[in-house]
Image (tube, rainbow over the protein chains, first blue to last red):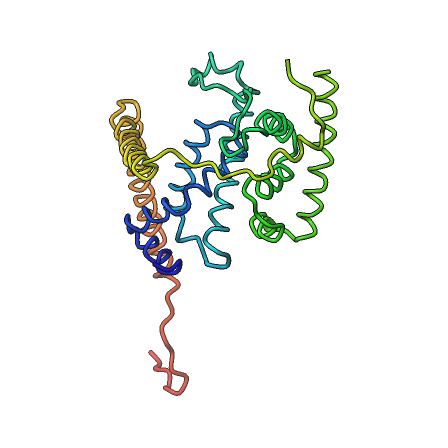
Length: 190
Length: 104
């Protein structure tokens, strides 16, 4: 089935087409979301959210970009919304006994081990992910898409709806900031 | 205690990273969740509608709306009635200027 046929069938609400979409794009969505959230359980939930959103809003897809670019966008937006919601929960956590909200864990991230990292790099990557967590949102997105998803600058620019030079600048600033954060980490641990 | 690494080593630690794979049966779980969410949405609507306070409020709202329209219509009818004689008084008949006026 071509991408065009898949989109048409998805717009008709075809479950089989949806199944094919999930099977072909699940690792793309999961890996992106996992890189941003750094939590396996949250990434599983958000991956499901992404596919439900894609299925429900496929009629909004105009075909101006590739389907995978659009899915990347939905994944990034959904993951960032999830992070913001968790941060808000943490900020207003003192109200939860009054409001009776569920006691979901908030944003205190434990050490994150990405399953795709080479064994000899595992410890270093955990430190790097801790530093990535401290980056501003757009730098974090650009860095994850480029380094964890392995996308080119051009693809990152398309997903983030920005120019190539803006992505270069974002990644340059991300790397500078990461080095600065890591320097502080090293000072703390030494 | 954490080991101390060279910053460049840490920065390059994602080189050769593989894509993480989602748990199996993702599609089945997504479909299950969609059905569950649909049910939950129906339950929320049912619970809202069957709540006595809300049912009473909706009832009051419709009774109020009906009363408003009835009163409004009655007032309009009354206004039309009072305007009728005045309109009749000022009614003009077509006069043909080429016809000779009949003298009484």
